[in-house]
Image (cartoon, rainbow, N blue to C red; front, side):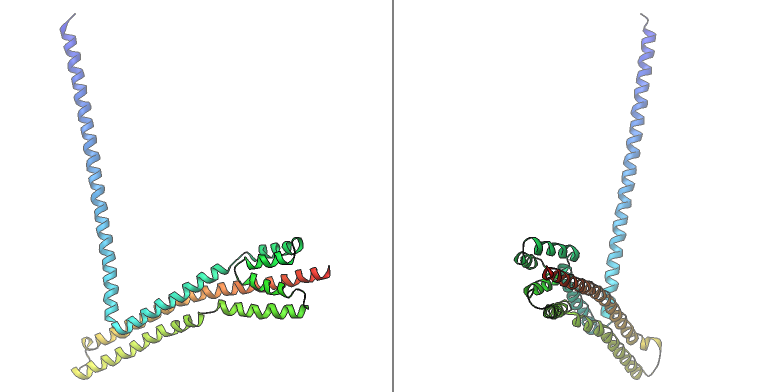
Length: 263
């Protein structure tokens, strides 16, 4: 057997192995460089986001201080307390909502199949004003229709009052926030005129600080009032929805009682 062909084959195999190793090294280097670039880009994005967040917080804090800590704190207090009342009402009204039509169907079935006590038990075990007014009507089911209607209507008024509890405080803070802002505006104008009186000149730098206080307090007061107004309108929409359900359920209850007494 000749040695030359064998040596040629070995050289070819070694060359192929060398080329494969070089290609793998190039691929690894490319992957490493790409990963490094991606990591650097992610770090730059994180740094820019942190700087932006810090900048927004710093600007908000600076504007809060420029507007006068006293009045700005009062405006912020109006926002906090007003939102607390709004959130409490939203939670209360959400917990009071039920599927009124489905409940009235179940009530009618209970009254027909299991009797009056089972229907009362269903009302007691169901949350919300709709079940409460139905329970009041069932308590006087043996009375005249006029008496049942008066009882249901009176208790519905009580339930509406419970749903509207705290809404007057929300309207108070809606009115107070811009009023405090306007008060800060007046005080800022007074400060500007005092600076003019002291300096004896009406230059831009003389009145700048006072005008800044005036404008910032007004802006924050209006923003707080707008936020609270949005929440307040949402609360009112839920109250109107529950009130409509109560009226519809009361009419359905009267029809159920009439049909029962007719039998």
